[in-house]
Amino acid sequence: MSYQNQFKPVWRLITLITLALLMTACGGSSTPAPAEKPAEATVAKAEEKTAEEKPSEAATTDRCGDKAKLVKNINMFNWAQYMDPEILKQFEAECGVKVREDIFTSNEDMIAKVQAGNSGYDLVIPSDYAVDIMVRGDLLAELDRANIPNIKNLNPLQMGLYYDKENKFSLPYQWNITGIAYNVKTFPTPPDSWALLFDPKQLCEHKGFASMLEDERESIGAALKFLGYSYNDTDAAHHEEAKKILLGQKECIAGYNSDSVNQTLAGEEILFAHAWAGMAAQARAENDNIKFVIAKEGGAIWQDNMAIPKDAPNKYTAEVFINYLLDPAIGAQLSNFTYYFTPNKAAEPLLSEMYHKILTEGGMMIDEETHKRLEWIERNDKSIIFSDTWTAVKAQ
Image 1: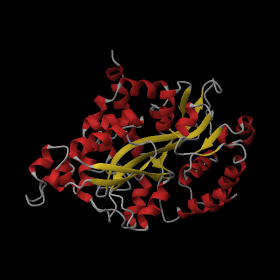
Image 2: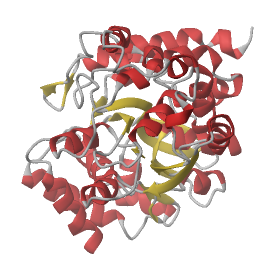
Image 3: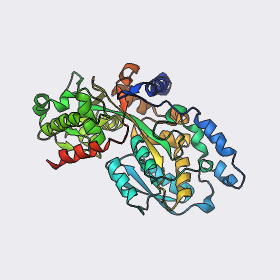
Image 4: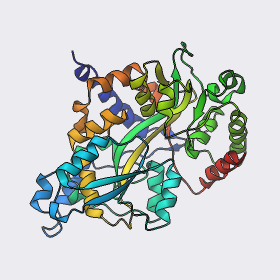
């Protein structure tokens, strides 16, 4: 039996447990369920538009849309190592559009660049809570679904989430979980707690061989989780506790790293890390000593999205590129490169045997009980405290 057929039940399990998770309380409040209408229903709405509003016939049958309306270059703002360069080459060869890609380290950096205006970016990849911030700040353009017929390929369970309930401004790109990556040579018994990174006695036994994500919501959230609080806790006293823990670990970690933690893990420059499962999987693809675990205290679940800034200079071409990425073959190619979970249901049967092998053997595919310990990172009017705490931590 091929890995492809062998692990189809795993994907069905992920679909079921994701639905269960979305119905579960998050940080003491109820996490919004998926939108009432699946993606297909939304596409049907788009098809009710008048003929004048619809794209040309070419746009509905060709992955390049209406080529006469495409520009020669668009600019994309993305996370590091989060796009297969071959996809960009294929899009240029097929559609005549070169995609220039710039990299950001955190949602906050990306938001600041877009908020300043005239960023020149046609497509950005914000995480869930960042979409919420950008929508509230009137920073995103409403998507023209008529130009993105491949919306029909998206898993309805990944649509209509709390940050963009009608998916007016964003569509799923990849989704994943956050926990601890580790080297089995150093830890033959898998670590089971955030204490590995936050208890000085445990951490400093391996001084200089651990890293944390360069991400205020993730790093502070993990510290809060270790203390028994929610990832989204905004209590000032709890943040003071988290700040002390983060300051206490600084002398024993190699540093904060979101861009290349996969490479430092694979090269064994570090032996354990606060990491996204996809990054851990990328490291395992190079070094099969790398595995991943969700701490007993819990971790994060999140989804990155494709969105277009409100002042984007080339909106139509950006929508065509989004549609291209949602093609089943391209969607599978993307996840086969990133090792993150795909929201593209039509792409799932096309995921490679190697993809399933690495994620399953590396611990990135987790069970329903583990999913219950995961939280979505959300934003509210008090979330500014995360920036204040992070500034204080980074300043010392």
